[in-house]
Image 1 (cartoon, one colour):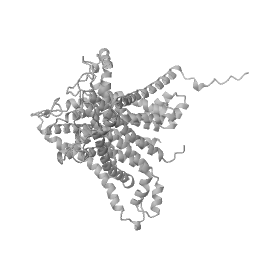
Image 2: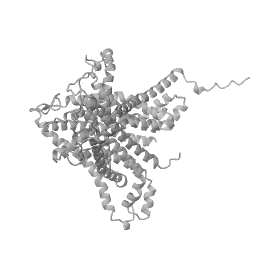
Image 3: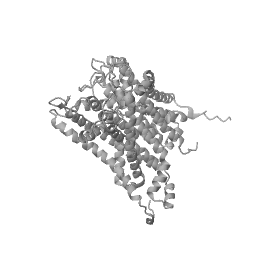
Image 4: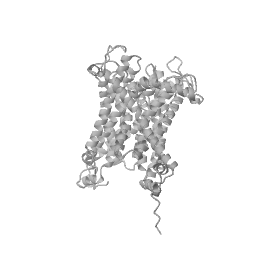
Length: 298
Length: 313
């Protein structure tokens, strides 16, 4: 009597309808990814294609002073300068506050009600619409304190958007620092604050810097808060503390609304410049993260 | 941790004070945002001759200011919901693709590509929307109106590129990365043992995902969707360029009608009188409260889920 062979590969015999469903979902998931990438390609392609037309020395070194919307020429120097100053100031304001808050949450706050509420409101703060941050600075700085529209007011609004991001990323990195390091330092008699400054923060530094760079990249593209706080100007204003100042996102917004070709060309080139700045910051952040990442057993 | 008292350092107190102070400053900023918005909104609201909540006009700069939030709030909610409906299925698909379908080696790079979507500044999407998308969608929108006009949403006889639906498409693109990123994280957390068990029982990949990954990830996806919704409602510049900026209330999303709170602030700020600025701040306060509620709800769901995840691990 011959032994009847095992039915070959029972597990692969999946009914047609089930296999079909599996295939359909596979197709849908691929489709979803394709659909998500199409607008990205479209945006980047058009920005590069249309932006290169005016991406020249004049654009980078001249302002829009005395240049009508229909005139050719003109540039975004005043806006680039403004963006760098505003984002720089916003970084100077939000990084110390954000970093110290993160240190409090990780090192001192554990389990305290204050730490819990700070943590909760930092989360909530990430969801504040940027235009509301702008309105707040408008209400507080411009309308209540009666200060003028200025780059600094814009920097204040941007820093409100930056702070929660800085806190979150720094907190995450500080938590990753192994407790053994802290304990070793305490065992040597080093006070807690010096332990934090000399051991904990340096260990987490690259991660923190990466988080800060990503936060900068995010706020560098914000338009709405600038619209309400720095106002629109066509001239170069090197002083961020006095008078209207332009910002690059605002420049794109302003030029995009003008219904003629020369202005729209400038808007595309402004968008290209803005994307280059943002992508550069992103890239640097990722390079730092990659370069100094603790060796993950590859 | 507790250290011997004899080594108490002089720097410790001030340092601790500084870090606590920074945290308190953050809380104070949150409170100040609410307070200053209220303080500046009240005078404008007192000068208002219409009902702020029900009025469909926005003429705060007139000698008899008359303005109301009704049309703006409606437009904000409608456009954000439309954006969410469009973005959610795609985002969940992308998240599944990256977490369970894409080849392991590619997954990281593909996730980075989706993150790039988030890195593009919103004003660039606005520019893209105005110059490229508005002319581009005229064809498809006419088609929708002609053949699906019997659905109230696509009804009406006028078809314009500049419409709520066009704005919603741009919003959908902008909120997709955040929904996809959070969904991907929760899908990756789905217990391996469950996945392997269902595969061992002979489930196909889809059946495994449907039975173990999706039920596990549902609360995370819901909160991700709400965070996306909050972001869509607060988005300003792109929609300021694309929405028609009128003050009607209509479900006909292809018509040349519609606006949102944020877009109205951006468009109306330039020529606002002091009362007008107060009115815009009042509308911003409404936006602040709505987004705050949506975000808090999302955070609560996430927080609850964290415990669940730890218990399941």
